[in-house]
Structure formats: structure tokens, C-alpha cells
Length: 142
Image (cartoon, rainbow, N blue to C red; front, top):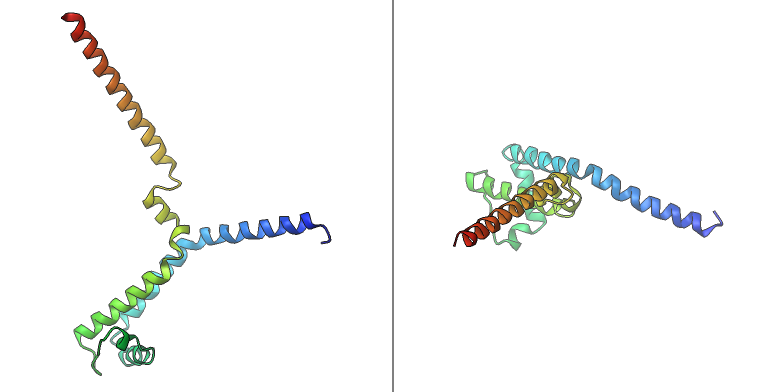
């Protein structure tokens, strides 16, 4: 370990491996966040007093200027479900750039899109050539 080149290569490989693992597991993390949020939302009725206590102690309700009743109502459940969804979205934001599904939606790293784009460009070139030929033919007829 006395050689700085070995240390530099190990650091490079470690960083590369970390980002590779993050990219490999990013979609699993997003699915886990969504599934966990769905499970929490499913159990709002059961654990309503616990949700209410956590929201009151964290001062989220006072920050949002909301008050929730001691017993669950439809409005209170929708508010808690919205807070669960908002929290899940905020937790997911740092993971999104590494997600393969998100990158596919944005068109990043999509070889099929490049092939389609080349095909469409070919069609456009063919159409321009046909148009030019028609223009030349119409000029020759005059």
C-alpha cells in the first residue's frame, strides 16, 4: 500500500463500484419506498393515534397550519395520506437520477430511441429528395 498508484486505483474502483451499486438498486429502492408508503397508508385507520402523535410532536401540523381531530375522519385520513405521499416523493428525489426506469422515461441511455430517431431522419431525407425530384420534374415540364 505504499504505492500511490495502487491507492488511487482502489479509490477510483471504490467510487465506481458505489455508483454501480446505487444504479443497480435504485429502482428497488423506489419500489420499496412506494410499497412502504402504501403499507403506511393502508394502516392509517389502525395507527391513527400514533400518526397523530408523530405529526404533533414533529410540529408538522403547526407548520402547515393544520389541525386533526382525535378520532379519524375522512379528511384527516386524506391529509395523513397526502403527507405520506409527499414524504415518499421527497425521499425518492435523490434516487431518481440513478433509476433505470426514470432514465428510460427521459430518453437517456435508450438505444432503441436512437434507432428510431435515425429511421425518422431517414424518412425525412427521403421525403426531401422526393420533393426535390418533383420540383425538378415540374420545372422540366415548363
